[in-house]
Structures are given as structure tokens and as C-alpha cells.
Length: 330
Image 1 (cartoon, rainbow, N blue to C red):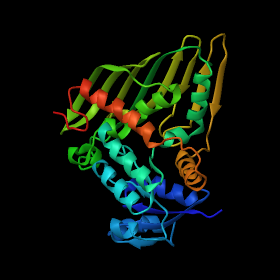
Image 2 (cartoon, rainbow, N blue to C red):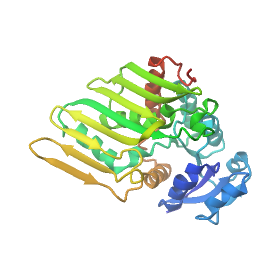
Image 3 (cartoon, rainbow, N blue to C red):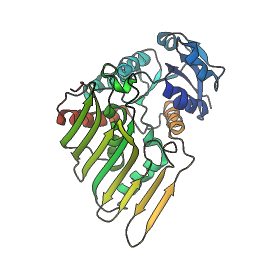
Image 4 (cartoon, rainbow, N blue to C red):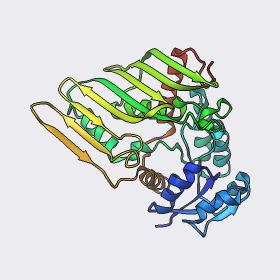
């Protein structure tokens, strides 16, 4: 099997600690190059992949003929621009979420993908984890009866990181673009449904970015609520509540980092089934699935069309909270 050769655009902390090691470890993938002008930042990558080539610019990496695919971990406001540049350079693209900041930008992304005839996707890793694949299977098979309500929580506190790109409006920061995509996309993926209304969104802003969001939404068959915050003690969970059962994921978004990935299915009568995945790495699985799609043309779990649906919901939430989609608040 000929490996898919990868390059990374930028020496981001997340890329160094999670995605670049995942590319290096994934079957069918080879990590071959990094674009950064900072030798000190490059060293963290060379420690586990010493044979990587270094390019001093993003354009130089995209011009490298020995790279098949690129991973883009740049700040949010640069995602659309560099995804399109990479596609035009003939590279497949896996771009960090959110790949866009407004739903309207997806028309341009999809057109660029289709024109290039390449795979471009958002790095929405949770749909590659077996806990979410199992949750979708159970919910859609009726294991909890009719789905009535979904509630999701994802919080952490980075109040002290004033210069962090998540706390800066000019880089597309905010809690919803950073982690709200998980609480929204997870409900859509498992249920297979799209929101029809967002009757309530209470958004708290600091320095022009959302730091606490309380959201209520209506789907065709169920209600939805979420709490997303960059100013609260770390916590995460998602619960699917049916008329004859409850399914819970207690570590849905940072599986085996925040806690062990675990699913519980409670159908009453003292019957509780627990499934755990202590070894599954959704970053590695994401890369392997991406490579399989590139090589064999297999369906990809998170195409741009799926990510567009999450951004549509994001835009609805910002509008309900009084802000234009992709704009900073007050």
C-alpha cells in the first residue's frame, strides 16, 4: 500500500501534540514535511519525526511535488483561504475546525473541492470514534425508543490566556467556533436530523468573543439544549433521552484525554449496558479514514456538506443571540 504523504501548514501547538503524531502513527499515511519559519517550533515535530522536511513558508510546502495531502491547523480566519490555495496546488486537505466562519463560505469551498477533484474536509474527529458510531447506531435503531431530547455540555477555562487565538476576535475566536461545533455536530451526527429553529441563545462576550453560550434548539423530533464555555471548570457530556431509554457519553469530545471514552445505555428495569474504548484514538482513525477515502474513493464520514450543516446551526445560534454569523459580539 502506497502511503499518502502529508505536510503540515504551521507549527501549531495542537498540531505538534495531537494531529502530527496521529499522521505519523496512522496506517497508510506518512508525515513528510512541515511549513514553519521558526526552528524552535519545528524541533517539537522533529523529535518524533526526525526525517521531516522543513519549508520556510506555506507556499513552499504547497509547491512540494512529494506531498499528497496537507493538514491545516492555522487560526480560524485563515482556513478558507488556505484550504482553497492547497486545493489549487493539487493537495488533498484536512483543515481544522471550523473550516469556515459562515455557512455562505461553503459554496466556495465545495466548488473548489469539486473543481480540483480532491478530498477536502474539516477535522471533525469525533465522528470517527467508535463511541459516536455506536451511539448513532443505537439511537437510530430505536434502542432508547423515540428520541425526545438531547443535551450537551462542553466547557473549559482559558481566561488567563489573553493572547490565545480563541480569545481574539480578529482570528475568528470564541467558544462556539472552537467547541460549540462539537456539541452541535454531535447531535446532528447521531440523530441524523437538522435543526429547524433556535428559539433561545444567551451569549456572553468578552473582548468581542463569545465565552459562555446557553442554547436551546428545536429539531424535527426532539428538543436540544447546550452549554458551551471558555470560562468554566472543564466538563463535557452528551445525553440522548428517549421515551424508553437514556444513552450517555461521559467523555465525548476529548476521548481518553479528559477521561475514558464510555457509553452507557439505560433502558430501565435495572438494565444498564456500559461500553468503553480506552485505546481508541480518534485523531489516528480520522487520518486513516481520510487516507482510505483518498486512495479508494470510499465515503468520508465528515464531508464538507456535513460541516456546512453544523455551520448553518452555528449561524442560527449567533443570530438568535443577536450577532451576525461570523461577526464579533459586544
